[in-house]
Image 1 (cartoon, rainbow, N blue to C red):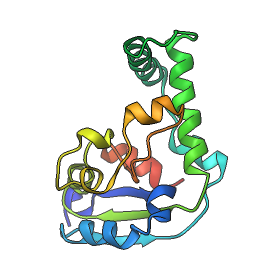
Image 2 (image 1 turned 180 degrees about the vertical axis):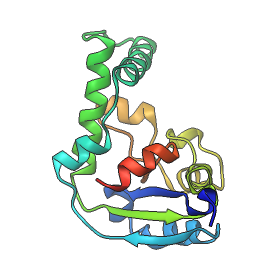
Image 3 (image 1 turned 120 degrees about the vertical axis):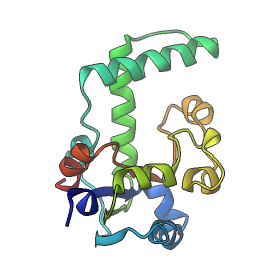
Image 4 (image 1 turned 180 degrees about the horizontal axis):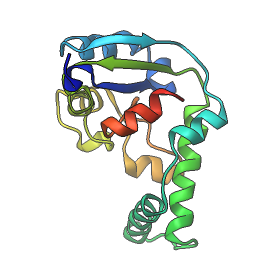
Length: 172
């Protein structure tokens, strides 16, 4: 079997997806792509697992922090931290959320699994995710609301960005 057909990706239904009873709907949508479900469990993630999942490099922290600064400026809010500190706050909020309740990690396998799942899940910002995507159809949160509440966006699902990252995340 070629490497492309063996490609695996991690999909994690977050606590908001579990709480809203969307596990079956999400699994159904992914199954319809033809990918094969090779692992699934129901767990409460530890802080260590959360920080390992959201392990980000300096560039990511600064880029996300700079975006947060632009959002705060646009909302007329004071800038009280460096871009890196805002980036770290984003990671901390994600870890707090992912460990706040049960999650459903799944491993899907098939031809270009990472890309197929990313396309199906939709963009991170639910408000601008395309209709027909999981986030576009099922999520009611937005960056504006989550920023005002000083929490991470509740977008139902985490999926891997690239095949190498998938290999790392699947082991968590």
